Length: 187
Image (spheres, rainbow, N blue to C red):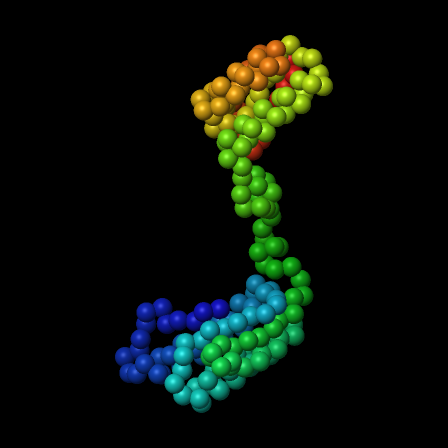
């Protein structure tokens, strides 16, 4: 957690502004740890304070606020680099885990295949299906981006595969399909 003043510097003196900001941050950090149910090692980078008594007061405020937490929290104090180390035991799933679910498109990976990659998957699957079955035709149903790629940049590969297996391959785009979804229908 990195604490900063957000561009606000009090009218009187900088040390006082830094001290008050750090006190407010100590309260907010303790509250957010509880609300978000964060667990594990937590490092807090308070704004550098010039006076030792300010550091002690901020640490005392943090410990006081953490007493409200029913979960075990251990505060190690300030390190030589001016960071506060603490650990908090995880008791249940995090707020993000409770309120969110994996993306149905990427299944929580955070990435989806490119249209070109899906085209290659389709071509490989058609080849596998052609070795196993003997349909009159293969119909590919996929997203518009994939169909466009097959008709444009991958048209030579598509034509070459059609010639190799001796079967026509028709294409149909489906607006409701995600970029990675496709169906190959054997006709």
